[in-house]
Amino acid sequence: MSIEDPIKSTLDGLLKVLKMENVIGDPIESDGRILIPVTRVGLGFGAGMGQGEIAEGTGSHGTGAGGGATVEPIAFVLINKNAEESEQIKVLHLTSPDPLNKAIGEVSGLALELLKEWRNRQREREEENRRMKKESENLYTP
Image 1 (cartoon, rainbow, N blue to C red):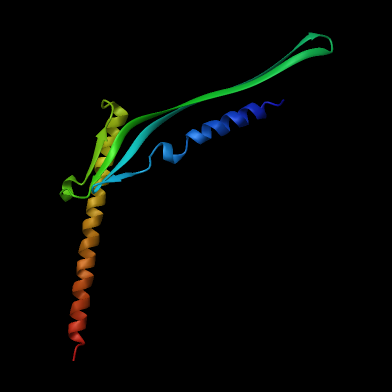
Image 2 (image 1 turned 120 degrees about the horizontal axis):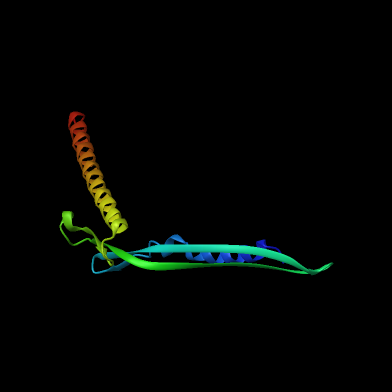
């Protein structure tokens, strides 16, 4: 058995845990609300190989690999379609605010603000396009 066999099988198993669906879960929708689970994934891995000689011409060898992963729910993103615009998207933390959770919250807050600004600019552009189309139609109407 080569060292690659246990490493490959261990890595294949760990890669199954590291799928995006395990970090950002499938959205759950009900009554105008969408709940998106967010998790933290931890991963550890190790491998080794050894050999030795008992007597001249005889010997033994061994290989091994192991790993582990954890998936911990840390938050939910709540999208409430029925709420006022400023309250439509919230992050509901499931753990106490450690530095990483605070950073995620701050980044998500900034991302939400950018999304709102982008959405407002899109609405303004659409309104401007409608206004210009209407004006151009009025100019060419006999």
